[in-house]
View 1 (tube, helix red, strand yellow):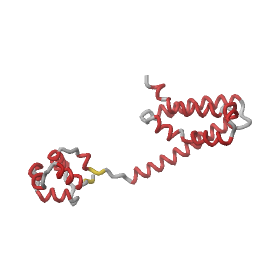
View 2 (tube, one colour; view 1 turned 180 degrees about the vertical axis):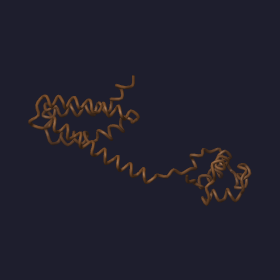
View 3 (tube, rainbow, N blue to C red; view 1 turned 120 degrees about the vertical axis):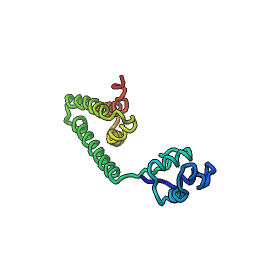
View 4 (tube, one colour; view 1 turned 90 degrees about the vertical axis):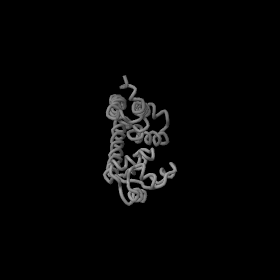
Length: 182
């Protein structure tokens, strides 16, 4: 835990208190208040509670949260995993639908996967917001739709089943939570 002494000093000045008055209200030594405001020492939990009560502020307002290296490493690993996952999903759909030798059976399989894969993702990520889910698991499809719309004519996208499958996938990711709310 790291404490921001400047926030305590600002709160003290906003309340119109001197360091001595704060020390009296918090039942602490004046030198202790000076050390805390200068960030020379970190008070224990009870002392911090007394100071915050005297200043009528929340403890969370003066405590500085630090990001761990583990959190940053975890963020990088999760991002890498999501990129790989999106690439794998796009490859599966590309193989099932976009392939010129794809039969109607594989295209129907692509449509079914376009519904059931996002349903599984929605089941596993119900605490995520719709937009967060779309950005994490659907950004590969969004990029794919944009690129393929420039590369291939629009009627070909519809007739091949590519655009309907992609829209089913993205729509299920976005609105999928509505299936499970009741």
